[in-house]
Length: 123
Length: 222
Image: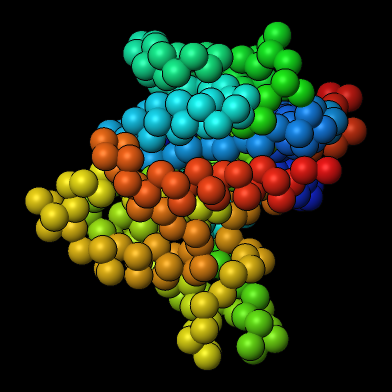
C-alpha cells in the first residue's frame, strides 16, 4: 500500500545523488530489503515504472535483494538465519530468539550510472 | 560513456527515521510516555483508548491522544469525551501515520505537562509497521473476532511490537475464540511479548493493562 511513497523517496534520493555526475543516466538502482520490511517487490516494480517517468531514473532497472531474518540465539551464542517469518525460534536449538540482527532493512545499496566522458561532452 | 557504480547505503525512510529520533528525544526530555497503537480497522483501538484515558484521568494522570484516520473526526470526538486533549489527524488516503504528521499535530502542546500520550494509528496491520513515530512502546491489538492466526499473517507488525492487547474478550465464547492458539501464535512471532486480554465493554483486564502503563511510565522516569 505504501510502496508508491517508498518509490517516490527512492526517486528523490537517487536524483540527488546522480546529479553529482555530469550528464549521468541512471541504469540500475539496487535495494536491500529485509524479509520483515513490509514491502512487496511486485508492487515496488509496478510503482517504479510510473514514478520514474520523466526523471533521471526513467528506463532504469530496479533490483531488489531480499535479506533473510537473522536473529541472535543466546543458547547457541550465534547469529542464526531464519527460514521464514512464521516462527522466531532458532532453527538449530529450537529456543525462542529475542534479538533481531537483520530483516528490517529498507535501503538503497547502490546505483549504476552511465556517465558522459569528457570527449563526448566536447562534441 | 563510462559506467560507474555508486555505493549509497542510504535508508529509504531515513527522513522519517530522523524526524522520529528527534521526536523520541523530545518525548524523553519532557518525561512523557508515548504509545503507538496499531491494529486492523475495527479491532477496538478507540474503545480501549476511551476507557484508558478515562481511567488514567480518574487516577490523576495527565493524558492526551492523537488519532489517525483517513477521513472524519469521529474518533477524536469519542476520545475527547474523556476530557483529555485530543487531536485528529486525517491522512486523506495515506495508509499510515508518519513522524512528520505527529510533529505537526503536537504544535502548541506542552509535552512537559503530560504523563502519557497515546497515538492511535490508522487501522492497518501492514504499512504502519515501517514508520517510526518516535514512540517508546508500540502496542499491537488483536480482537477475538479476527482469528487466532493474525500474528502469523502479519508477522512484521507483531514482531515489531512491544506489547499486545487481545480485545473484545467478552465475545470470546460466542466467537469460539481459541485463546491458547492465539497466545501461542503471538509468542511464536514475538517471543516473550507482554500480552493483555481486555474487554472495553465490561472493563475486564483493564487493571493489568493500566498497571503495565504505570510500570512503564515509572521505569522511564529520570
